[in-house]
Image (cartoon, rainbow, N blue to C red):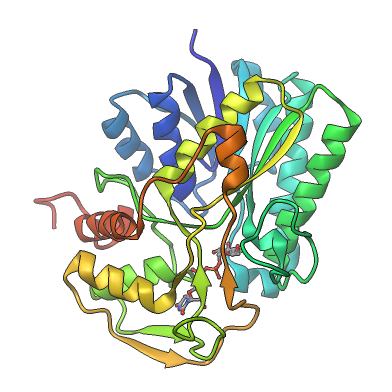
Length: 347
Ligand code: UFG
């Protein structure tokens, strides 16, 4: 029988792409999402893409009784925990909300998992736990928790600590911490993709909304960094590559791996202007931009050493920057207003 995988935040950007990969790998994903930063329309799209009914529950990870009920109804072998708040700027103004949802939500979830004897977890961590890089590329032994500049990043670090302590206390737990670099792109179908509810904080959705005409002009935050063109350098990774990394991590859990940590990145650094140029090429649209001051908390460069995931998970990112931009543009141009775009004929 196909193994059931609970996917918290499964209607979100990375979660939804992972749900597709899970079905393709023969798992049965069950989604829990409160739709605070996602749309139920995504679920219909997932069913169209996969040709399968996707089971989901509208529930909050802070709602312990609701989680318990869901665990009662299923036989989860694994949990992939995406559900979290992720706006860096907002986390500075409302830190308690971030600690409550991101840390409190994780603690709740693993408590319920424990009660129901499901002790296999993949956790969505972030390159943000490395703080300002002491060296590049960032490998998994680079110090973490030092110089993190915002509460969002702290919550990822604290969650890593919580889960490490949990694994130490009970050898039945198998936990994979995946440190994502900068996920972009979209599924080839153009039916799902990144759909920020407000003004995008992240570069790629801002660029693509500018190309489609929803935003006037991109502000490039900082042009005096010590990088080839002075703008910030990041390790952008196609979201489908990232999703595939989760299936590989599930295989690792199947080996009863204890606690493991992997970077999921490409190892390549691209600047903000590289992204603007690649996106213009992919979309055939100009992306107007202006150079402005640095954004507080940003670092000059951040990119991964993805070698460990290659050796231990047999995973490498396969999709390059052009494909990331083409797929992001395909999604954006088919759905100018994201999941709220009315279907053709209903405009
Ligand atoms: N940038 C702009 N203009 C914008 C948005 C971003 O110039 O409107 C620049 C940033 O200054 C940075 C680069 O584009 O140089 C990437 O910025 P993003 O906000 O897209 O991504 P970050 O690297 O800042 O943040 C990402 C994730 C966070 C995570 C962080 C560190 O969004 O969740 O990586 O791992 F914490």
